[in-house]
Length: 367
Image (cartoon, one colour):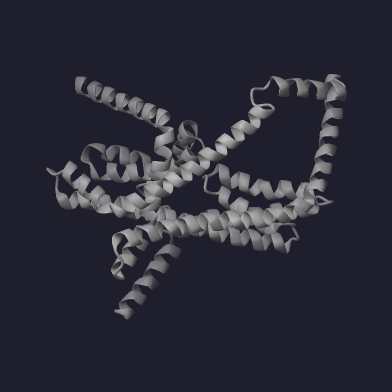
């Protein structure tokens, strides 16, 4: 009993210490975490270039530049589509003003406050708000500068981790030199494999969803379908919450830009159909559920990530908890925790098994 109490105190102290480090070290740890995941994502590209005869510095730099060009390309595409979106601003403004007027009339009927008084209250609240006036623009530009700095720092970390990747593996080997070296190497390999599969699967899933959204919204006649599809697909980076927001965004924009409600209903139907296909086909077979966590653990990790790191935490904590499960599965003392947060009875889908079987046959024929 004393031993159980002692171990419980150790686990509790470790959790409190970890939460404190994650909370107060957010500015330092977020770009480092993104850099680590992107380095694991681009490691196969770097290895491929090295096999072709290029040195480590060139392969690492090329892999990092690919990430940079992808980011710039996404910004350019969204910016070009957003310029066409400006034509609908007057209509959106008109519908917004009409909605505000109806809301004011509803409040006047229910509460008895006249529209002029409502506007006065809103203005007074805006003036007393700490984010009003110049302070708002100051915070906006400060946030923009911080975001750009974080992205650049993230790319620098990615390059350095790719360049020194063997050093990190040797670090774990030296750290656990008394353990079986093959076992430690397997743990490191499994962590890198799961991260690569999760990230490549997530990237492919976003591209497929963006293409399907674009085709579907274009067929039902929604304006700026490509922009709306791109934004909706990118929001799926945030599990659960992002999928919901990504589906609602095109519907609201259709309501704001179209003259009738029918296009919004068609858009909602298209998005519902694609999200159903994503949940039951794309997600299981493209992303593959490589993190292998049960639903409760997934939701808890997303909520915890949002509380500690905001949106970056909601994106990062899911694969990190998946990595934690791999470690738990390979450490005898932690195996019960790996069992608790995972899905031990989960079976791979028939489609995924069929694809693996066909690929395996193709590889044998090539050999």
